[in-house]
Image 1: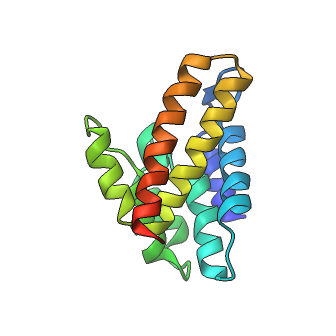
Image 2: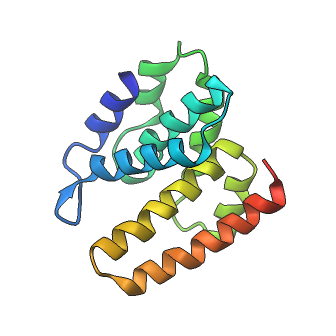
Image 3: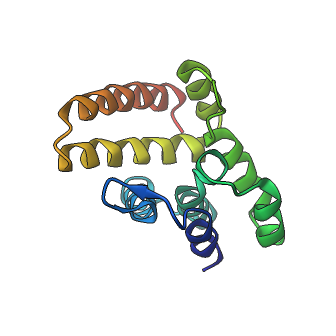
Length: 151
């Protein structure tokens, strides 16, 4: 699985709490499949792939060239790169600007919603209720945007 191997290599030494960061990505991938699975196979592939790759540009030293060299022949490459661009929050970017950009891409918005759902669960699991509330507020905002867009 090329997508998993790229994500695993890019996030190789990263941790989330007391576990490997790749476990967080696995939870996001499972959540997005459970919540947003459709009859559109290509959309399902993109949801899965973006869930695994959503943080490669933001949190790792992996570059767009790394992705290009590994996936440029992938039949959904252009749509995947558009979604990755939309879901990657730029350094210093305000949340409102980020959510606006993310909301213009249905794949990115759905993955962001799934990721935020997972973050609420993770924060509860680690008994960080303050951050669970923070992510719940973000989730409510994202769901309002999703409802407005009606993807």
